[in-house]
Length: 89
Image (cartoon, rainbow, N blue to C red; front, side, top):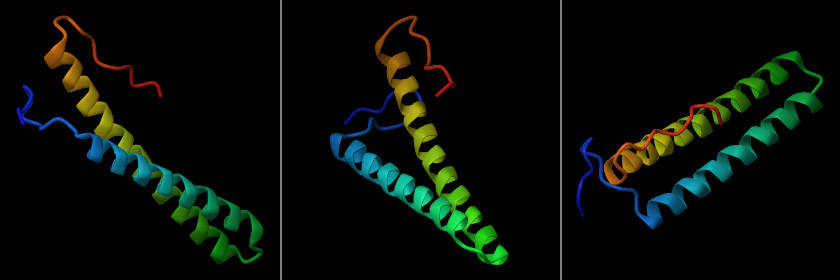
């Protein structure tokens, strides 16, 4: 397996499948935590559930950022004059 210009190995189909699964799990956890936060009447529990939801959302954003780096570097390595992806997602 060859490394691209930045020294990162390309993602395999298995890597991409795992990242897809992980993003799905993070999204489900985020939604459930927000749902629980809105259902509870206890302020401490509500605050904790919002914190949990925000952490899962940050996890999902980190995975997406990692994927973006790989996509941008793959584009640069394979297509002369190609531009990186927009940061607007």
